[in-house]
Each structure stands twice: as C-alpha cells, then as structure tokens.
Image 1 (cartoon, rainbow, N blue to C red):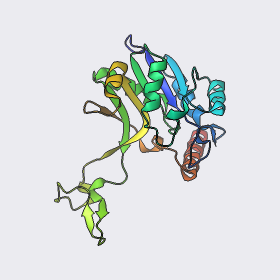
Image 2: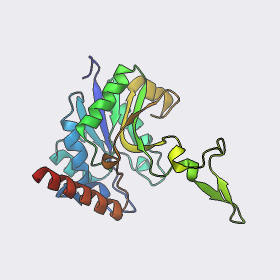
Image 3: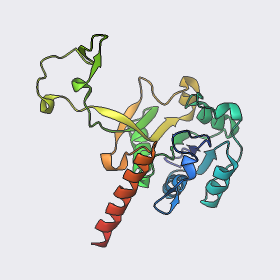
Length: 234
C-alpha cells in the first residue's frame, strides 16, 4: 500500500508473439523474460498483489514459478494480434476489483528496476494526479524528422518552429518507454486509457528503457546486462 491506498500490479503476457516466438518466456541472461519484471515487482514497497494476464499455459506456469499469481486465464478474444493494449488491463481489473491504484508492468521492459516502479507511484501520489507513465529522452528528435511526398520531397513533421537550425537547439523531447504505467483505478475505468490530458511523465534513463520486440533487442539487452555485471565486478 501507499499512503493507505492499495496497489494491484498487472503484467500482460500473451503467448502469440509473432516477431519472437514465446517472447515472454524466452531466456534473457539466464532467466525467462517475464521473470525480470516479476522479481522487481516483488521488491516493491507498495505493490500489494502481482497478477499475470495470459492466455498461455506455459507462461502461466513460468509466472507462478517466479512468484506471480495467475488467478484467471485471459479469454482468447483478448489475446489476438489486433487486441487493443488496454483490453487485457481492463479485463483484469474486472476480474480482480477493489484496488485503489493499478500498475501495468510490461514484461518487455526487463531493465526497469523496483526504484523506477516505486518512484513512478510516488510521483503520482505526491503530485496528486490521476495517472503517471514512464518516459525517456528520445534519440531522434521529431524536429529533424520528415515524411516524403509522392515526389520524394521532404516534408517536416513539425513545422511550428522553423527557427531551429541546429540539433543542439531543439527542445528535449520524451517518448513513452513502456516500462511503468500507473493510474487510479476509478479514473482508469472511466477513461479506459493511462494516457489522457491529466497524465504526467516519470523520466527514466535510456539504459533502463529498452523495449524488447526483436531478436536484436534481446541481443542488446544481453550486452547491457553483461556490461553492468562487469562493472559490478571491477
């Protein structure tokens, strides 16, 4: 609990990953991908219950073995390629009602730490807002992005400020990193989304913001973890 408010953590993990088959239980540096998220969530000072929403029996077994609950299996219609990302979260909230705050933790963010989770919750509470989500500085500023016309002409994505001529002068731009989503339950049920006009951002460093979607992402995460271990030994 945090300031007397109960907290439910939901880890969405469907079995039908296309890019990397069985991605959520693929091994990363010696343990299943989903285990990284479960372990950090278990360290939280505030999370009261950790549940995994999955349609896959193998994922359910792995999640249970690492200490998360799988109190229900996700219906097949909520585990399709075109299923909206919020659908499994709202379904889990209906299956397990009664919590004041919801924290969504996607298993594809294995480098997120318990400090990130708890700090995002604390920021949401301290600023008395309805929702707080994790973000990180983007490497590619939209001020230097273009679309192409049929004739291959460059069309600026952002045209409001054409006075920026140097990359160093462009303002900081943040992107969702998918690591931590926090919201008041009643508000989330009403809006149906963590992202709204009231949502604020919790800034995470780039090195903990990697989102695993491809085999190349797994290789990068492996390299980061090995480098961190090497630094700890020195």
